[in-house]
Length: 120
Image 1 (cartoon, rainbow, N blue to C red):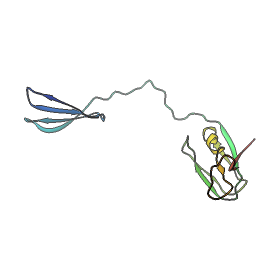
Image 2: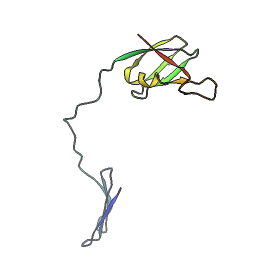
Image 3: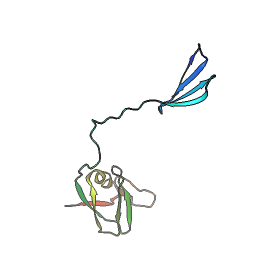
Image 4: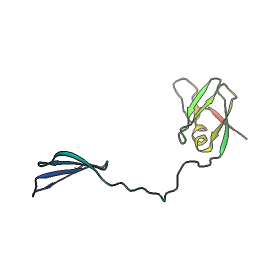
């Protein structure tokens, strides 16, 4: 949200935005922009290069399947029924819950057929 404020002594209008930019309307200098100072957090640990355990999932449907992992965003592809793909453990949680209903209108039903099974 913008926070307008006026300085009555010079009729200068300043608006600070959440993006760190100040809009200034000064009768002497005209319209302008200034940027707020940004500090860098150098003590936080980076989230990349995290090790993730791998789980192997087998497709039980006789079709090509492509799914994007909900946690990692990685694309997983099963070419046919029985295909086994290495999947992140974080994504496997969601993929193992995928179900196919007994009719074409009832996908993801709890009593439907599991799309994937875990391979030991």
